[in-house]
Picture 1: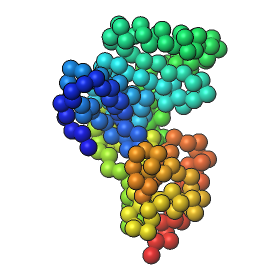
Picture 2: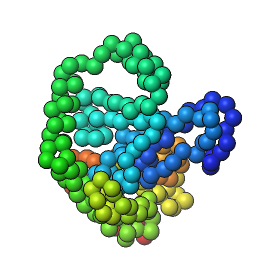
Picture 3: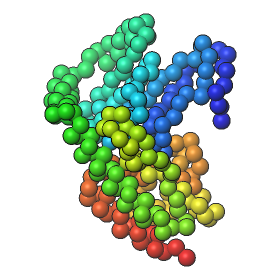
Picture 4: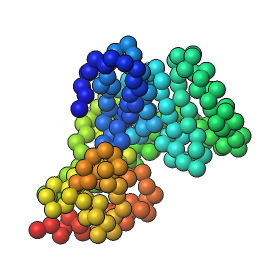
Length: 234
């Protein structure tokens, strides 16, 4: 793994923070005058992670689907400090997409007005409460297991909501610790649990990702199936 490497040559580093699927806050590993950082901030919202400082990177990308869950809008945006990069991005978008549909923009604007009602924190507090409850539920279930383990996430200070905030990640990153469970997704599939294999995230397949940002009915079905899977440990 690269770590604070002085890199010679032109290179772009994509930094997803919080990371997917672990959910921890990470920093670039490359440094140097020819290194350009593109910060993936799609999960940098207070329902998913504590916000220690406002995001202030040179080029940041965001996604409407990750902010509110409205994936059908297919809307994203970027904050770009370099005017030359901004102009080239606008030129490319105009040629590739012509322009964003007006109904998509109107839908997004209507939803954002709801999000910012009051002090703008009601939506984030509600979403965080739901994810926090689900993370606590899964953490409790997996605490009885010697076969599986979850990622470790620590309490952090949140400058936006104020105070220390315990983890409320959007994904559970599960490790199958047995040598026989090299294909962890198959283990979960046998228990009728849909997961994503570690290979989709450049990891070994003894890991799987579980989505916590599901409909309540889906989560309610997940819990007893996880309990049953863990109860079968010998």
